[in-house]
Each structure stands twice: as structure tokens, then as C-alpha cells.
Amino acid sequence: MKRLSSALKATYFFFAGDAILLAAVLLAFGLAAVLGKAAQAPNVVVAILFIALIVGGLALTLGRELRGRQRGD
Image 1 (cartoon, one colour):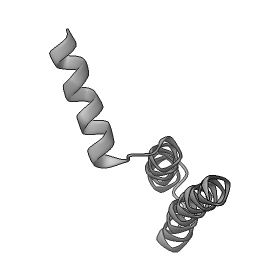
Image 2 (cartoon, rainbow, N blue to C red):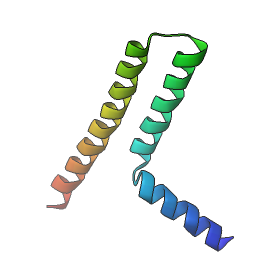
Image 3 (cartoon, rainbow, N blue to C red):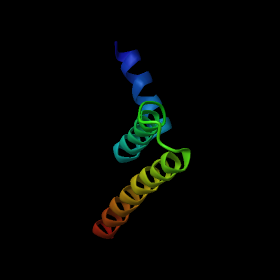
Image 4 (cartoon, one colour):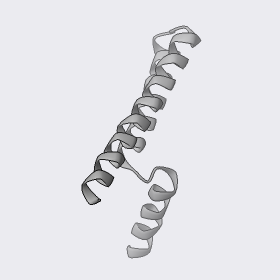
């Protein structure tokens, strides 16, 4: 069980490294799938929403990192 836990943790750190990024990417893919298939939204709308969610996750992560560095100086 410990080996499986270690493998899952290593996979998580490899792909995301940050819970905010992981959540933003999962949300972006989920919403894109729902809007693209179920709601029949135009591809342009799906693409804009997808990119906005990814950029939003990156901005939140960067802001948190910058606040953390200022505290540590």
C-alpha cells in the first residue's frame, strides 16, 4: 500500500505539483467536455473558456507563490 501511495504522490507532483493547478486543469477539461458534447457549444466558446480556466489557475498559483516569497524574505 505504501508503494502505491508513493507512486500516486509522485504522479501528482509530476503532473501538477500544486492543488490549484490540478483543480484548474481538471475543471477546464471537465467543462470543455460537457460544453462540447452535451451542450453543443461552439468550439470557439469552449476554447476560450478552457484557456481562461488554465490561465486563471496559473495566475492564482503565481500570486500565491509571490506572496509566500515576500513573507520568507
